[in-house]
Amino acid sequence: MRDMNNALRRLDCVFTAVDHGSLRQAAKILRVRESSVSRNIVALEQHLDVQLFHRHVHGVRLTQAGQAWVATTRRHYEGLKDALTAERTPRRDTRTLRIGLSALAGRKFLTGLIRRFGELYPDVGVNIEDIQHERAMSALRRRQIDIVFTSAIVSDTACASETFDRERLFVLLPADHPLGQRPSVTWAELARDRLLVSPSGEGHVRGLLAAENCTAGPSVQACAGSDATLILKVQLRQGVTLAEESVARSIAPDFTIWKSLEGLASVTQFKAVWLESNPKRALLRLLATARKRADSALVQA
Image (cartoon, rainbow, N blue to C red; front, side, top):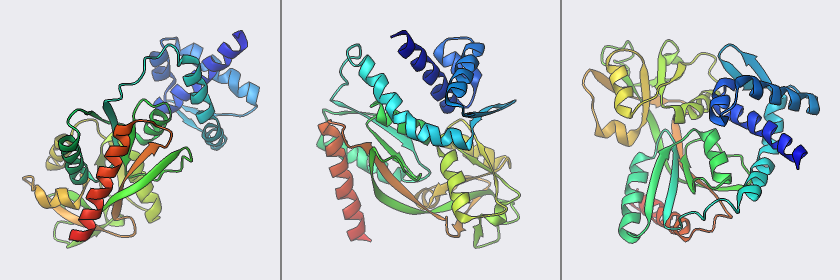
């Protein structure tokens, strides 16, 4: 048992560091010294004979070998943690749906979906929280949330996914931006700009830039705060930001201008991701409601 506890302690340190990109933050979450986190990670690296992390002044990031190891190991680690804590953990509230939101688009669809779901099933509570895509997949597998709505690519074989909506992306520019007279803009034309995004959407934006294969694109900066904060920063000429077409058509902030984005990565998907083994009836009802709304939208289009 002592050996198992030591192994779990080392794994806790590794995966907490992965989630937060920092040994200091991992130590804070685990309530131990930073030196303890570092020692446990080094011990595991020595045991595996693999360097898992690159260390730098701003934190840590996985090496290529570390990414491969995490991809194959994490599911087993989380399953073991669940098995060991199952008896101590109270049964999840079956009348509450926990939804993670990690998307650039789809707010119009999600708003309509939650309103309709509330009308059909008023006895089910719905909790929605912003969450980074990487953490969302972990939370799904550990059943800390029931479903994630995301725009990112999903490669987790333990999860099911389904696309419900697609929208063209628009970029919000300061009104006097040099591209303000153009009918539309490309990723490459934004190369001199700072692209402001929410932390939950940062990974997806970087994925879009990779898909576009731009050699020169905007620098991406994650900004904590609401959509109103991002818009204010654009109004103050501190950068540009993105939104889906339905948002761009519905709001017109002062001192700014919307432009459609052109290119291969100018359309984003809005999809649901969930664990197929999740037994909640409310989850199945939410998915059925989402499918009906998506089918109705296709008929109207």
